[in-house]
Length: 300
Length: 101
Image (cartoon, rainbow over all chains, first blue to last red; front, top):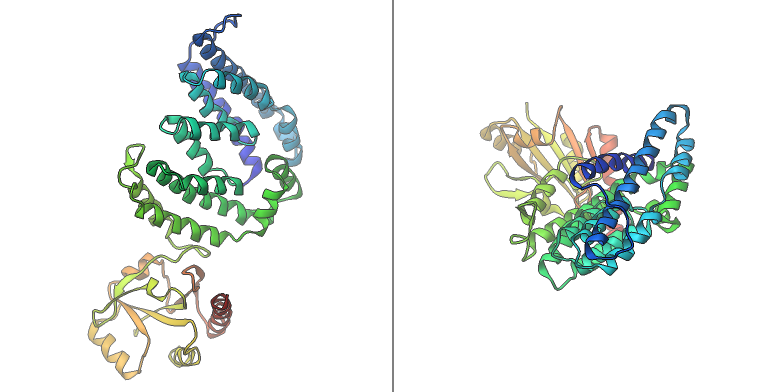
């Protein structure tokens, strides 16, 4: 993964998101001294909209001057000028905790976890959604965020959630874990080629231990683990009954496995099921444990 | 190729190694008689229509692929006895090291 691209993406999604917000939400009401439930919702909306607006302005500015900057300068500029997440995250967190049943609290959690991905408050939103709203949309959003989170920390969190007593949550976590390991393998693969500036940004966003772990890990092992996890999803008792966007998790896991098993060096070799010339069936995976030299040949 | 393959199979006997063929484009009778005449001891997927070769994107023959003991594809679409010897030696050593653990 390219961190520069990640930051661009964060800024870009700010624009996309603020456009949808502008369409769907009513104009924010004036802040008042009252603290009724409705006002809490309006305040949460207003906080988010203001942050989006600020992000969009910064992004506009960035577009104007980016052509004059080196990648390092761009990075530094973005770090310096992007609105600080804590400015919106801290008041939102307070309002969510004070109004746990409010619909806007769930909305705000989803928003915080997608916009605060390199901030401790984003992590808090993920944990809060999974712990307190496990059957709600924001918990689904939390799994999606974790699935794209390349940190070891996210792997560990999902492993823990996969042990949940709630079968549906457990299979959902396992499925997200498979995706997370895959995403992480790409990051690990790219890690040795990071420039000094990129490494610095990663340390800043994720911590030194995450960079060290990425440099030490083996990408192909992570891919193998991801595939093994998908197989575990398919075998999970709740895989058929748990749905995601209208489709059974079992089917989604199978599709993903098929896609992954296409031919790539460093990934699991695609399975071959066939027969010898006498019609006796066998498969490539029968040879697991042995090194296989696969020889495509003909007598012609 | 054939003499080299035979020697490979015999020299890696009792070690974590298997030569697996995919016999592409031959008629069954031809495949059977050829195996007998040339005392081929290793197994091949019989792929007369080339379905497996297509799935693997094979473009020329012979075409070799090396898959490690964990099922991970390590080397793709290579040929040449030197490369075969090098890759097999390398990954069999890795497999044996892993087995000892």
